[in-house]
Image (cartoon, rainbow over all chains, first blue to last red; front, side, top):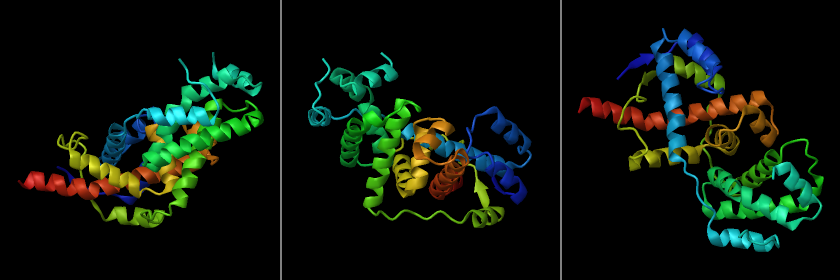
Length: 81
Length: 196
């Protein structure tokens, strides 16, 4: 377990990439540059893990059969066979 | 047959082409609404509203954007309207500069490598759901489109009618919010684990 404090200047640099694709080469480069700041790395890793957990927790659901039928009826469309 | 051709045929009154578009996209629209609204009944309503709007406005679709982007825009707007009507109270995000100032004095615990933190744990799943439920509409919609639906920054900006820079800012804030919410729980869990 790592506990550490973060430096504001470095955090600003980190924030600049947190709205990007976290695995993009540009992000990787910045992460490599701030890797000498363990707290920044911890912050980045926990952001990335949070996104991953949310993605893994999401599952695609089928439209309930009755709902699909009702939709086609409202739109006056035929069901595909 | 591709979307463009199906749309052209549907615009000329071909019911089979319209039916094919509905069948092709109903599941994606339903899941998009479900992800934003987090309620099946509301997602069913949005699915219906979205395709009723598509049928009504199909003539106005000029093909300058992809059909998919246009459809997602209608579905996202319908979902956000519904979410706003419910008047849920979302957790406020801290002021950005205040957040950065606070970060300077905070301690971080690395729970990202803890193998016990995974979605097979019921409590972890609950915490993830709770965190997303607290995310307010403008941040949730960007998070869903970018990180869950994996759409590009450009597509997200077109769907939400906001600038690409704004997409990035909202996504960053959404991710930071979710991290902080999850950290409140995971920090404690990891500390207890290490102490035990």
